[in-house]
Length: 354
Image 1: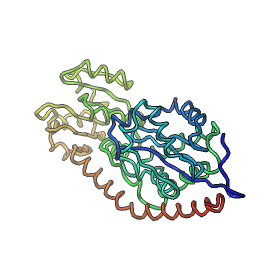
Image 2 (image 1 turned 90 degrees about the vertical axis):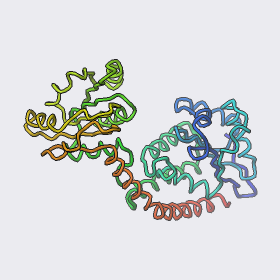
Image 3 (image 1 turned 120 degrees about the vertical axis):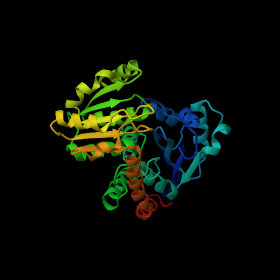
Image 4 (image 1 turned 135 degrees about the vertical axis):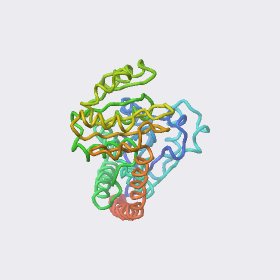
């Protein structure tokens, strides 16, 4: 690895971020510049061979591809990084240069702290990105691609993300329909381990919901009123079971959550049906989730004891309220990040006399 350039007794080094994300580039550009995690080591090694930065790290997710580096501040590090991305993607730089953002010094630090904390994500305050940043850092560190600058910076970013979650409400509440539904289900049943979910419909929304339920330990049955083959395929993908539509009521007695998400232009589940189901179930709690438009479940069913009915508007309203709460915390988060950025830059300037 190249030594950092020096002037007298002082190392002249700076921090850079070069990248694009869901705000600056459409998916067809992002996918061309994406670096699959399994290829990251290879790409880092190639960057080292070409002397792209003195320390380097790649963060690539479905929503962003970013190169982080520490390099001699007077070297043309940004141009070299841009040319490298162009060569890696086999895409002329003119096709995506206007979609790139370049940060340097304190701006780079503040950007990373915001990214790691979920403030720069499509869903504000989401936590998945924190794990992705940690994975990217550990890989680069393990392959000796990071040094004193990036090691300190990325370790600090993970601490900042943790502090924001304890000192603000940026992570409060769920902000997607599927996660809101899971949250409500856990409030009703305590947890979803061995909870039985029945899903009528095989579209995107029902798939998101059932995947979210299964991820928390639920067991699912898939039903389609018109396309049993789709139900079979989806069930096979999720490790669930497929049932014929004309027989699904026989399984209601053992079902805890019923999700309806069909394109049928009429009510499929009426209040008298649910009343009979509850009699057979001996009033064991039943969570009805109706995400169909038009609605599939008679709204009067929610008047029955131990029946909990939420439609798509109910779920979105909760998600929107939670998102508004998170957005109200952005100012406080920004202040904390700016404070931590100043602390990091104080350390950095003392270490490298920048």
